[in-house]
Length: 254
Image 1 (cartoon, rainbow, N blue to C red):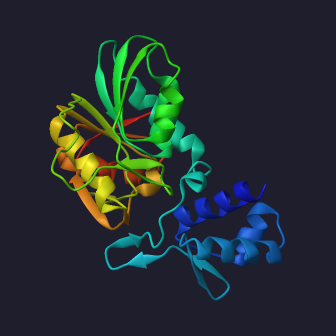
Image 2: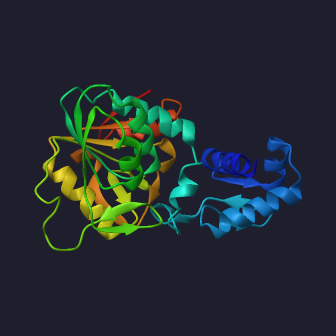
């Protein structure tokens, strides 16, 4: 399938940072013409940069720049198993009686399937999380309203200083669009304000990501690794990436 083929191309880029059309064609057993079409589509999405004879990751002076916000639907098909591994590990830290904040993002959506089958309270600004947990009899669900962003399906609140409307969750689980050294990034200022507020109210702060986010920067810095309790990352990540993360934060793999 095209989505799987394009994901494989991105995986190759994550491993090697630059690849040629011939290298991709030989690895995937697909014609050069098909690969060139895939590279053109991925370049239009800002996921890679076309160079003579191949492609490379888009880079700035301080890491990879995400030049376009990837839609929610696109994210659901990228690095699914890596995200699932991180989500499963994070879900194990939720216990009966907990009140947790679940932010938006495809990784945290996967976490919903692995929450304990015991009574918990969930606060969220994510429409997909709301839909996934709406029929769960074990979840006391609180939804933060506001303006919905159609590209990410998360709700952001007006700049009125009211924060989470007085709600407080001792455990907060958030994802990110980029991690560079000690910095954790999101794409939208209004969305990251919600995450910052949730983290400020929590005693335990967890980052749930797939390792491909490491080494990338985005537009909005909303926290640092040192301010987080732990990061949940897929176990098959590059050992150098895990080592780099562990400089700043406790890393849990699964």
